[in-house]
Image (cartoon, rainbow, N blue to C red; front, side, top):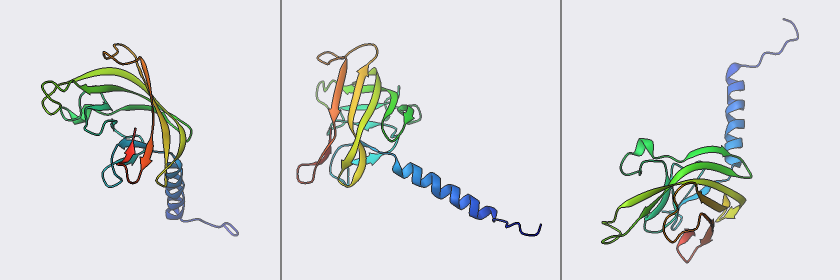
Length: 159
């Protein structure tokens, strides 16, 4: 095997891992929980997205995360550099008699994330659209669109 240069398997594995890591790093995240940077979070393919400051509104799987965490994740069908789509449930607290003691009701939704940009030095999707696929909560529209924002002195990340 004269003239053939052998590349150690470990070198190939390291190169592939670095390539996969770079690809994942290039994907935008989403504001998965609002609040200041030490509390709010940016994630790629999060299990849930809490879009209210008090936790009374969130997107998750068919079971509420505090009831059955193993069956509570958003089902992401696609996540690319330009958009993400998935199915989930919008969990809404009725706040009766108050929000701490209220009960949650779930509504099936189709989620779409888009408009990649930068918030607080993080590459994120700036638009989130939820379309109710069956029942629509009272007082809500079939389709809602949120825009992510960041205010360093005004609470941090927000929808």
